[in-house]
Amino acid sequence: MKINWIVCIMISILFSCNDNSVVTKEAETTHVEQDTEFKKDTIQTIADASTIMARPQVPILCYHDIRPIKANASANAKVYTVTPEAFAEQMKTLSDSGYQTILPGDLYNYLAFGKSLPPKPIMLTFDDTDLDQFEIGAAEMRKYNFKGVYFIMTISIGRNRYMSREQIKQLSDEGHAIEGHTWDHHRVTKYSPEDWDKQVTSAHETIENISGKKVEYFAYPFGLWNQEAFVPLKERDIKMAFQLSTKRDSTEPLYTVRRMIVSGNWSTQGVLQSMKATFKN
Ligand SMILES: [Zn+2]
Image (cartoon, rainbow, N blue to C red):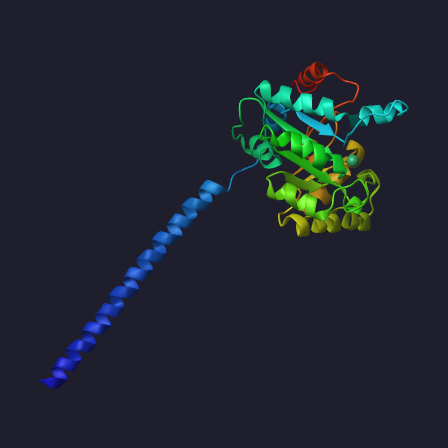
């Protein structure tokens, strides 16, 4: 009788184990099915080049120095320098006109996958790591909850009149995008394979070490690009690259996104008019 009872317990344990394993397998199957569903949802196909070219362009402004313009400044310096007063007025006007800033990830999702954007999207970009862009640029944008995109030239970090690592980290923590603009601003059209590693791979590692976030977007120095640059950029996980206002490459519009330099000679209304003219499709 006692032996029978032990056998009975053993059999019931055996069955219960079997039962458990069946339940586990069922759970695994369900999990795998859910996983496949999840992947179906998240793996999306990037739109073809002609679809991307046909999407209305988002205005993207490009700023360099934000400081008083000296009377004896060169014609070139007057183009690349916007006074703090003009910059403040431009930010206020954009906000009053209903513009909302977007970041490169938003633009990428819109161009590549057709995701929606706010009604009046705009992107504000800042090149070359100038300190003014932190002290004045970020301070003015903060008033309107605007977020900018900082394209960092890494050789300048910590130099006089340029941003420090801590300031770049602060911008990143505040929600601005911190992206790549090479090590020392040489044009990509003349790079050897070693240059690509030094100017892009290493420079992006420097930026990632500061921000703690992956660099996925790139601005060509001087806005200059050629078709040979696309593959090295893709190999370095760059999803989208920004030029200035020359014609886009119709086969690779994601690697020739257009931007407009805001000239220090323009009035705020002039900026709005140029924006409309430059980014009309
Ligand atoms: Zn630059």
